[in-house]
Length: 264
Image (cartoon, rainbow, N blue to C red; front, side):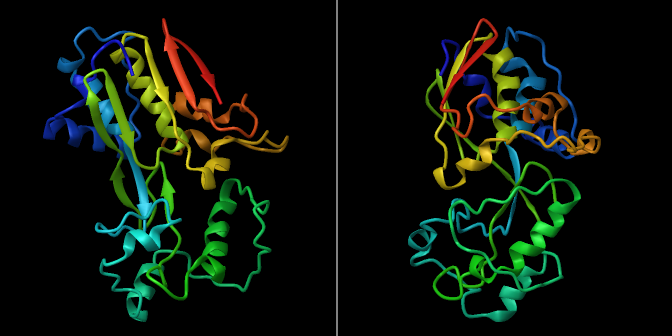
């Protein structure tokens, strides 16, 4: 919400959308002026907005929403589920995950949250695909692998965009899995566009809210490989800072005179 209209964010031209996608894929840094006087006429602003909405998803089935997965059985009712009884289709869906498989066990407790850093992230993917309890054996989701979300491209991933909508010209709604990087990327666009004044109300998906809080880094934590990860340097710097809200998720973000305040 803002005292300035959000009309600049609607009806992007095909060229602006394409440029936004290209900037995302190239991990291009977009530097906007402190204030944009005519947002609707600023191509750089509109392209940066498109760039901030991009995320990557696997698996991707255009007729099914695969995030969040809780309650997905109800949403899938009456829709085609060609993989449910076809083992060959299930194998195709799984083929984009790592080939190595090892038997693993988990204790199914909510406290069993594991943080994996660095190159061991790929080992985590092997763990996920090997954990039988993560892949349903019956029902509409039988054989459907877990949903992967990422701010940058990965093998087998499909480019997706968050959906923007308007209740009125002074209110912009962004729908979809808003990853932590996306929130910061959007603030880099909204600040100049709204002349340093806006308020954002955030609704966390509770089962995955823990991923919004970054634990204090270990002393041996090394960050030298992160600058080339594909995120904007300012976003990367923000994500590396220790959280000030503890384990809580941010619920309110407000900018006044280009200064941020936030609440859980």
